[in-house]
Amino acid sequence: MSDAYDYFREHAIAAARKARALPPGRPKQKQRTVARVYHLLSKEAALAPNIHHLNDFRAARRLERQIGR
Image (cartoon, rainbow, N blue to C red):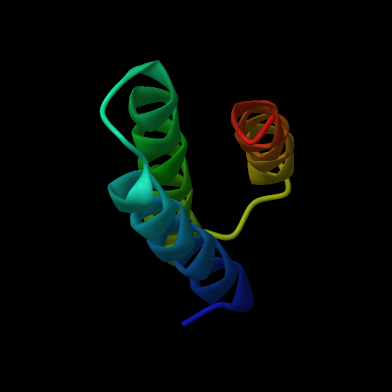
């Protein structure tokens, strides 16, 4: 397994747990979307590590920070 896979997987798990803790509504939907993005990134990183995943990861992190506000 690659380090990128493990890193993205941990973020996906944390984001899913955060989504479960939120009350129903738009922030919960956004958080679940972020968790899905992290999950897809982990799947792609498991197949072939690639630097292009970093831009997607950064975009997901920005969205996650906006949800927390």
